Structures are given as C-alpha cells and as structure tokens.
Amino acid sequence: MSKETLGFQTEVKQLLHLMVHSLYSDREIFLRELISNASDACDKLRFEALENDDLYEGQTDLGITLSADKDGRQLIISDSGIGMNRDDVIQNLGTIAKSGTADFLSNLSGDQRKDSQLIGQFGVGFYSGFMVADEMIVETRKAGEAQAIRWTSTGDGQFTVEEIDKADRGTRLILKLKEDAAEFADDFRLRSLVTKYSDHIPVPVRMFKADDEGNATTELENVNEAKALWTLAKSDISKEDYQAFYKHIASDWEDAATWAHNKVEGKLDYTSLLYVPKRAPFDLWNREAPKGLKLYVQRVFIMDKAEEFLPLYLRFIRGVVDTNDLSLNVSREILQNDPQVQSMKAALTKRALDTLEKMASKDSDAYQAFYEQFGEVLKEGPAEDFANKEKIAGLLRFASTLDNDAKQSQSLDAYIERAGDEQDSIYVVVADSHANALGSPYLEFFRKQGKEVLLLSDRIDEWLVSHLAEYKGKKLVDIAKGDVDVEKLGSKDDADKLKAAAEDAKDLLARMQAVLSDDVESVRVSGRLVDSPSCLVVNENDMGIQMRRIMEASGQSMPASKPILEINPEHALIKGLDAEADEDRFDKVTRVLLDQARLAAGDTLEDAASYVRRVNELLV
Ligand SMILES: Nc1ncnc2c1ncn2[C@@H]1O[C@H](COP(=O)(O)OP(=O)(O)OP(=O)(O)O)[C@@H](O)[C@H]1O
Image (tube, rainbow, N blue to C red):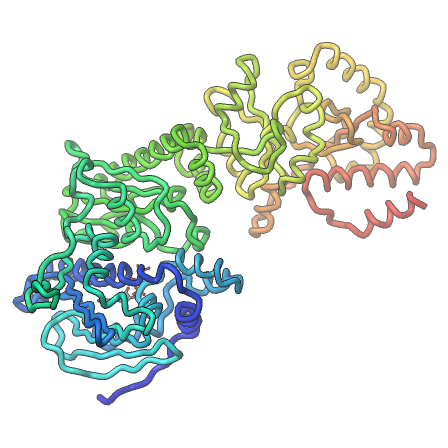
C-alpha cells in the first residue's frame, strides 16, 4: 500500500496547536511521557504474552533504548513492547481523541500561562513530543504481525502513514528536535532526565556507553534502576522517587500532596501505593471518565484503571495495587465479584481515609488545599459507604457562622468542641449559595443566642445531610426543618413569650390560613425569626427545598407535601397585617409574605408575575 495522508481529528488538531505554540516551560517532561508510553507498551506485551508466548517472537527482552545524535539534532526512543499495526497507529496517534479532550478544550481561557497549566493537568502524552520536535516519526511493528508501519507528522493538521519493513517488534520513535531543543540530544542531559523522571518504572531504559573521549560506543548500559518502585522497601525510596513515580503513573505535572505505601501479608497479600493529587483533574465530575488504580498481579501489569479497588467517592486517588491473590488471567468481570477484591477494597478504602486523616492532623494548610479540590467528592461518601460514615464525616469541612466566611474550613469535631457537652445537636442550614445561607432567616434566632450554625451551600449538601443523621452521638439538625426548641436554645422565658404570642395571634393565624389553604399545611408563630416577617419550614422528616428542586430537575415526580409558614408577630409588617380590615389587601400581603418566604428559602416562584403585580399594587 502506498503512502497515505490523513487529517488529525479536530480536537487533536487543537490540542497539537496548543502544544506547539503555547508550551515553553517544563518542556523536558516530554521525555517522561514518551518513556511512559514505551514502558506501558512493554507492560502490555508481557501481559498478552501470558496467554500467547509466541508474541515474544523468541525475543523475551523487554526494554527501552534512547539514542541521541547531537549534531543531527535527533533523539530516538525505541522499545521492544507490543507495537502497533496500521489501525492502531491511525486511531491512537491521530484520529481518536482521548476521552475528555473536548472537556479540556472547553476549559481553556485563552490566557497562555493558565492554559499551559491546564495542558499539564490534561496528561499530555504522545503529542508532548511536539513541544521539542519539528517532526515526529513513528516506526512500529505489532508483536505477532508481519507488516510494519511508519507514521510521520510535523504537528500541523496532518500525518502520513505508510508500510515499511522493520525486523524487530515494537516502536521506534524519532524526534527531529527543534533548533532551541538541541539539549535533548545531549547524552548527559538525557541521563539526568531519565534518573529524574523514570528511575523506577518497571522496565530498563538503556543508552549507549560513552568512551573515554565522550563519544558513544555501540555498547548499551542501563541508566535507570528499573525496579518497580512499589516493590522496594520504604526506607530505600526517597521523596523525589515517590514524586517522580507519581508523575509517571498519573501523568501529572505537579507533585502529589501525599501518599501511603504499604505491604500487606497474611490473609490478604498485596502491596499498595496510593497517592493524593494536589489538583482535581478536569474530568472529576464526568461519571464516565475512567478512574481507579493500576493493577498488577505478581508484578505483571494487568490493567490501567481498575475501579474495583476504591469507592467512587475516593475516585481522585491514584496509584498502584500489586497482589498475589489474583490469577494472572483475571478479567474485569472476575474483579467485580471476587471476595478477595472486596476485602482489598475495604482495606484500601480505610488506608486512603487514614492517609487523609493524617494529612488533616499534620498539615492543616495542605489539607485545606486538598479539601478545596476534592471536598465535594468526599461529601458523596456518607451516602455511599455506610461502614465508614463517621470516618468520612470527620474529614469534612464546612463554612460556619463562627466567622461567616465562605471558606469551608470547620470540622465537625471543632464544632462539637466549641458547642460544649450540653448541646446535643449540630445545627446546619442548607442553601443554594453561601450568600443565601448567610442571609437565611432561619439563622436569626440562632445568631441571637450565639449558637453556631454550619452554612452548607454545595449542591450535594442536602443529600449529605440526609445521609448523615448524626456524628459522634450528636444529631445533625437542619434548622429549616421541624420546630425549634426555643426553651432549650434560649430560655424558659423565651418559650413562655412564644406561647403567649401564639395565643395572641390565634385570629391572625386563622385568617392567613384561610387565604393560603392551598399552599401551606399551616401558619404558625415562629420561634426562629428575629428580623424577618416570615419563613417557610418543612416537617422534620420531609425533603428539604434544595433536594426537592434537584429531584424535580432530574425528572422525578415528588409526593405533594406542603410546607409550614411561620410568622414573626413582633415584625411591623405582621402587626400591620393583623390590623388590616380590607380583606383584599390582607389577601395580597399574606400572599406576598408567602412568596418572600419561598424566595428566602432558595425556592423559585411558580407564578412570579403575580408576585410582582401584588407587590406593585401594594407599593402604590
Ligand atoms: N511506544 C508505544 N508503543 C505502543 N503503543 C503506543 C506507544 N506510544 C503510544 N502508544 C499508543 O498510543 C496511545 C496514545 O498515547 P498517549 O500518550 O497520547 O495517551 P495515553 O498514553 O493513553 O495517555 P496518558 O499519556 O495520559 O497516559 C496509547 O494509549 C497507546 O495505545
């Protein structure tokens, strides 16, 4: 077949354009990315050859060779891995965008500095070669197949594919270096980059030995340790090694925030190395995005994103699990049902939570930074993982009336400590924004009494509260629900006053109730209001307004349940209403009070036009 020219897929094209034109700093990471790919290719061959020895073609050595020609400004990275056939090449290196590419591109701001950071987070992969090369040439032959393929591109819109002869299996990648990237053909520079980034990938990286004059000979030597990092003793691993390995497996430009490395022997037999990243990947909220740990069985790579080893709410954890408890021909189906995997999942979950606890207690700034990235994911935990509910809850942080700050930095433990033994509840208010939580009428009485309330305004918060009934024996109480115990929170005197006020307002309540009988279950005098005239509450076990809105938005039909309207008889508006003889005005004001209470609760008005009309009529 003759040479064929093909166009890159649109999103790949955009990505390449950015790579070529926007990335000038940290270019050296291209080497880590390309060595990672070569190492993955060796892993894949080792795995596939378990079932079919012939794939080795009599050549069982797996490794990577770097050869550089400084004068010719060229770097060659060869591997004896799985290789690619024509279809693989076309798909992998041009026409199929990695999942999330579109997401990623839509996140770009146009600000080159910010965007190049984003590219970093994206995991730049193969195309990062174009940061340093004018042209890339891939010559590759798939293990067990006869025909080899050459792919070439200069990183503009197109690439070519043609058939070639290649005796040895695997991939040879030739980088024609840019004029300002000649350093990457320098022997010394390459060696130091390999040690820096790829010391502990599980395959050897080799380079040609230099003779006494510094000229390359034809003899190869290993330049990296080539021992899978997780198999080493902790005491033999430096921080830098851990970080470099993290970047290798996570394709992250930044260091990890922390990690946990453990060997477990006994009933279960596995080694795990779990990392907590510093920054959320842009596809954290994409439910379809692949996630999970790199799985090895007896040192042999099995699969990249095994999601069976951690719960969904810990999907941001990256790392490796290597076990002797599974067979080498384990499949995804087996993983899903294997009791050993279940036990490992339980143990790894606990390990990950312990790691977060340790980070929280040792370095609260680092934990705060972590929480800002991943807190919302962690909040899925109590609903998903009953067994670890309390442990997860201890890791959560919230905004609070303590400082009214939007920053979520208060733990439940700190709240309980401030509240003292006598207080048997943790008070929370749930709203659709921090500003709405802060201005919520439900807070008024609590503020007056100096009782701290946690301010919840993430989308997931009401879901969280509905799954976290209590923490360390203290009930979590949504202060927009049920009755407030005025006597307990305030004083006997407050309670008596409230009773008397309710008695005095009997007629008013009945009049209002008659107007609103279709909309509310009842109208009553409020113990929680100080400054506002009215608010809406639901019964203790009813669904809150935020949750109801989310459920309705997702198309679920909700059981009809009416809220309760509470009024503040001390408020001038309510006093005026009580004295209102004109039934038409009474009707209008009452309905306006209800709509305002709805708005303050974060609800929307079904009939906003009528509300506006009424207010205008009253204003005139
Ligand atoms: N040396 C190689 N040998 C065999 N296949 C390769 C090689 N390099 C790349 N590939 C194939 O091309 C695909 C795309 O590579 P690329 O580096 O862009 O993404 P990735 O490796 O899947 O993701 P990431 O870089 O984020 O880990 C790989 O998944 C792999 O299938």
